[in-house]
Length: 176
Image (cartoon, rainbow, N blue to C red; front, side, top):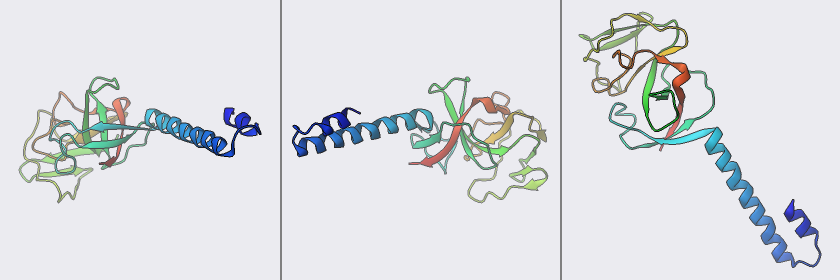
């Protein structure tokens, strides 16, 4: 708006009017980027080795910050304490509400609804937690595992258990 008034003023040199216009476009772009990074996406770092080989400790990732419909295989960021502070974990969604998850630790295979998951990129899962299987994923929750299946605190452990979807901060869009 200020630029329109300044540009309408015939006493201002055309080069100066162009400079004012460019400055306004730049400021609008910075404002739009700031709004997007606040309300649409977030940028965060992976904490720990539980998502190897997919994500490395300290690797930066772009995360949705809008409500999302979770899908099997999504990598999500979960608030540990229900806040949006730095306390978060990154895990892969294995089970959605209604799914029945079973893990055969001797064979190293994860089953969802009696179907084995084909996961050649991950080491066979051999370390059980204290959660009994099979487990049915309850409404409003998800079952998650770290990609580093034998070095991850995830839904196999009662300290984590089924994740309340209200604590999901977002889906990982792009690891950088």
